[in-house]
Image (cartoon, rainbow, N blue to C red; front, top):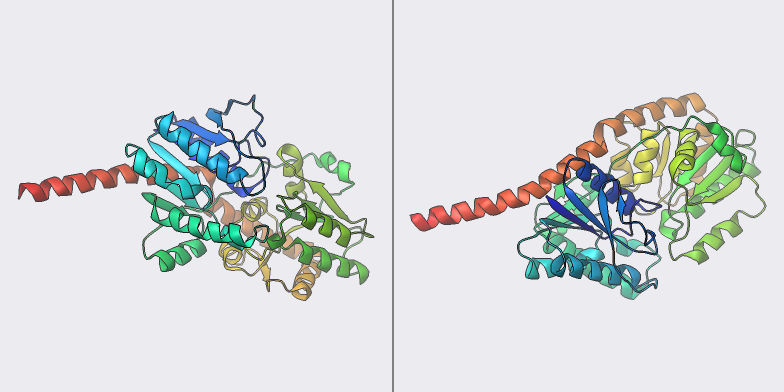
Length: 391
């Protein structure tokens, strides 16, 4: 099949769950012999990059502003997919880009259109009221216009089916592990194995990093952490520089809170490989790739009790605290930071769950099967119509 991906900023992924998701799918599909194209932004993927591990990269122009970049990129990519290319499947990712799914549905009936519903983005506090209203409209287009819509969590599946009164295809996010045994990569930040708590996310308010910093600082002040235990925050702002500055201001006076910015490759692998535990204090999530990856690395996940996080840690494979409750978060961190054997035992179960439920190979295969079902369903309709006409 000839497959186009629209919605991701680009690949290879530097940050962002959608970008990692698309990269993992696209590379595996290309390896299986499919002709795969990913539309990318030059602000994310350098213009000279024309391919990545068998995936062709098509750069399209866009307007580089906070509220127009994603929209203009998605529009231009959609036009290119309709008028300048021929695809069997056009796959939109995220609700914002999926607002343009109606264009190939109307103008390119030979192509099958599918969308992946990653999260209810209008809850994200980086958007103003107008943008959030637009994203709610985009959610309707995501769920109603494509021939098939994939949801990445059981939580989203339940919400979407109740909201739109139709069936959706559940295919979760995945996790991939590349252990990095070389702990010397941690020296750049003066870190030692199992002497730091890890958080990996974009620095956006709904990710809840301010709760984590507050809890950590209170533990420091009361000397309830092991000596020289540090907090490592991986990620950068996403048009939310004011929030990043706020987090760093909260951290002034503590040498044990370390912002390392965006990380990828061996450095990120080393940070996952040698952490003591992983904390995700999000107020809202789809099904977090960072959380699944932490589980796959065998880390104990300490997560807010939002439904998507609880879905991930089923079967006693993590611990939760009440969403936004700094006191409970503080208690959970203190308990497990001082009981590494118990943390490792839960982390081992988390690793087993991640390997069993969230394999990227299986997820890519299920996605291709979803593509094939769209062609099969069309043929069934045609055959049923032919039978009815012959009677």
